[in-house]
Image (tube, rainbow, N blue to C red; front, side, top):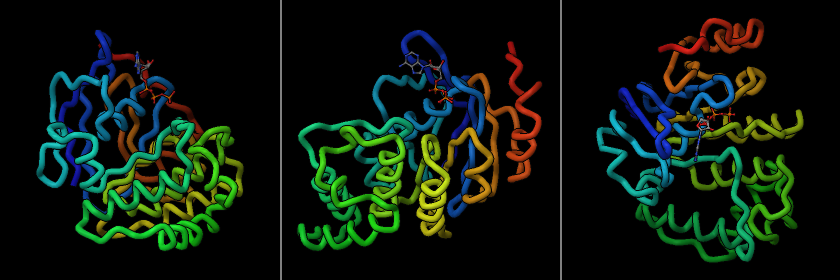
Length: 249
Ligand SMILES: Nc1ncnc2c1ncn2[C@@H]1O[C@H](COP(=O)(O)OP(=O)(O)OP(=O)(O)O)[C@@H](O)[C@H]1O
């Protein structure tokens, strides 16, 4: 279970999260919607341990442990995975080499034996096919020159390979064509299980028609301002954020 209580986060001297609270029980899928600049990506970075985001007060516990005391790699070893809004390009590292290294790091963290290159290739190929990640992409440098949709499909491939316990998807639907959106949603849905939680950040109710959330939250001005079931996403799509996002003192 993930429990975020009264979280305040600053970047430099700017406070971005201003008392955010959120609880995600194991096995549940929560969605966060909210206007541009409200702090959604900031939350995803703080959860995954990105540098430069200072937690000034509040707490985050994951299965009873203090998440904020853990290094990024420790969080990954606990099964926390972030599909980034803007996946990073890494020249000089092939996609396949990255996947093998990251997968084996995950396996080591779980006490499983490492897989050799052939075994990883077989596994990656089987999953890559259903997400339409081509052989060519696997041979190329990680994300370098990939289209927006290709990057997002590769993020989803990583998620299905690493089988995280808490998957955070930051606008994984942005830049996807309709067919790719369905492929990505199918990939995500195959991972749904009573042992796995998901936090889906999106601007569009359309994604939530495919990945049906247990709860929808609205984040505005650094804190949660509304919460509901999947029907809330439909309401927002129809009416916009309206009074929900009026800045509070
Ligand atoms: N490194 C940084 N330096 C300065 N300001 C930052 C930094 N990171 C985030 N911010 C600011 O914090 C606010 C929240 O940004 P964030 O990316 O979390 O919003 P978001 O809700 O994910 O937005 P979007 O829907 O547009 O992706 C924005 O005003 C942004 O400019």
